[in-house]
Length: 132
Image (cartoon, rainbow, N blue to C red):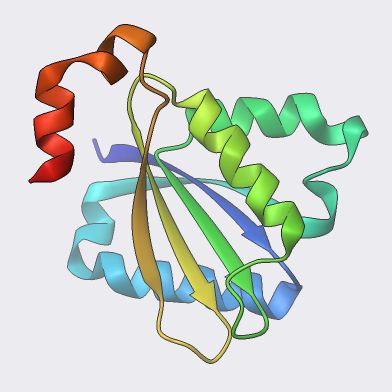
């Protein structure tokens, strides 16, 4: 049975969303047969809509990967920034991978780490890790 991969895509317009989905499938390549892709798809203009906030929060909590798809060279409008903050908060105790597909540009990936506890933030090991 294929391993599930929960992907949430926020798109600026439908063309950008379809482009991101095609690129994601191409990146998965031959492994796509080994992965059960579970999609949550949201237009960026709904990300800040209070009517949808509970549903979006569930998608963010369950997400293994967030994808931002924009039509221009900027990776996302301001609603995307707040969405990333929500995603980081939802994955507070682990890491979250984000892929951006800015229109006409090369895609990029980043990993967001959850907010550290006060004790972890003050630990000498964490400070050494920052300096390295």
